[in-house]
Amino acid sequence: MKTRILLCGACGKMGGNVLTLLKDDNEAVAVCGVDLYPKHLDVPVYTQFADVQEEVDVIIDFSSPVGLIDRLEYAKTHQIGIVLASTGFTDADLKTVEMYSKEIAIFKTANLSLGVNLMQALCKTAAEVLGEAFDVEIIERHHNLKKDAPSGTALMLAQSINQAFDGQKRIVNGRDGIVGAREKTEIGMHAVRGGTIVGEHEVMFAGEDEIITITHSARSKRVFATGAIRAAKFLKGKPAGMYEMKDLLSEE
Image (cartoon, rainbow, N blue to C red):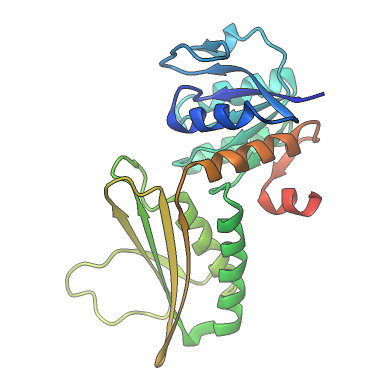
């Protein structure tokens, strides 16, 4: 039986990408959507979860942190999994997600791209090998409509790199004025916003007389939609807990 998906944020750009991909998917199907600003789609779209009538296996959430508890409560009530594909969560939001993961299956990652998750692993390995001899700077670039900075993906990369240093590094967001010489405890973070850039991330390891750069560039939002659908299929029937891309890749 196909995985039945409820798409939260169905009428947005990412929702449209997911719906387009699901039309030709033999293993999953969109049965309905929830969106604060509904429009006519090929599936029913509701403004609130209380109105949903369809049987659902997994929620894919491409909306925003607003209304997070409504989604989690619906998943808990119906004992289904949820893929949190949006970004911009506060620390309080993350604590709420962690609490609900004790009762439902939650798939959360800052980036659903396979390439970005490979980049994450490569950056961690590079940090372990290069150590303190190399300074780490992260540059992320996104379109001019993105609301949060730095991006969730950039923070995810920084956290992975920091694991190689036992969490002793601190993130410095940009630099301005007479800030003095760069400290070894820094991970520089720089956000660029402009045009229609889908998402670009660059991690620079700068040492004495040499620089190593690891980059990823998303040319279409379809890569994130593809990852969300894979995550939904993976999450169907899973026991309560927190899941991420490495769990999916391990099972596949």
